[in-house]
Length: 426
Image (tube, rainbow, N blue to C red; front, side, top):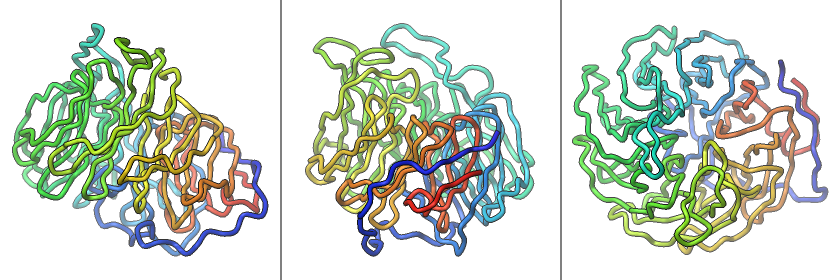
């Protein structure tokens, strides 16, 4: 099965974007990939002199974001297959298969690709008291980047869906059993395991200056910072026991603040959760203390069964975030929490967004890929595809967008085809 793309509706007469700002400019190809979506802003835009155009079929839904190191794209699917793909040609160099899904963003460090194995099944659930996410094999796995041969495997009590972070040679992970683990990548020894109670689902750990790592979870619902060397908690931001979804949201940072979203109940004394009416809320916290700067409400809608929240992006002084409960993307002033604009899409936008200059690119659950002016919220172009885009999030490499779909396609698509002017077919 191939990914078929046809040109969608375009708004004519929109001027091309201004010259790219430095905060959204492409970076040189990274030698390592040490955190979720490459950087704290969650904006993976990588400069190479190429326009990759290819499709790889994996035959399994994709919930992960790609990584790129040494010209190789790494991406896993929900059937437990990790793919290593030559970024220029689309040639599959190797695959590695495990039992459970691979939904974490692959990290690459000292020639080793690191992925988290685990599913989203809840093994123990009493209302408001979820003990564990992830059944069957749960593990962190290290593979040789060039061959896919397994180097090490660290079993986990809960799911390996959350993406770990590497700080000073320590791999720090927050799993679906409410535990924090640190693994020394040089000695291949576990340094500590700590129970922090909050259960992680699809969070991506966020490193901050001052030797802190931020994560989030539910039961109890909170955002908190740990010291990577010890696993001790430095600060926390507690949400209501009736809130949900914060364990699905990878936080972002502009260096001084931490941002994320969650789901609150629509009515007093109600509980947010799958199938209920929920309100998407977005917060900003002081990165040093965890004290709230602002907390705003966005749209209200039915909470979906998976991935209750969206993956945010920081570009300049703006926070861009979609919604799991409504078909919108928002631009929010990072200092004040004021919504600067909102853009209506064809379906909920749960996945990550990338910013290239003034343009932002993203996919939605209705199968559309979008190019939007980040300053004004004006439509620049859209492509309708034959698949859906959930939390499998795009990166930009050279002049192309690389993204995984719910049907299992990994596609490298020239940005010009989304911007408009060409139809596309793979």
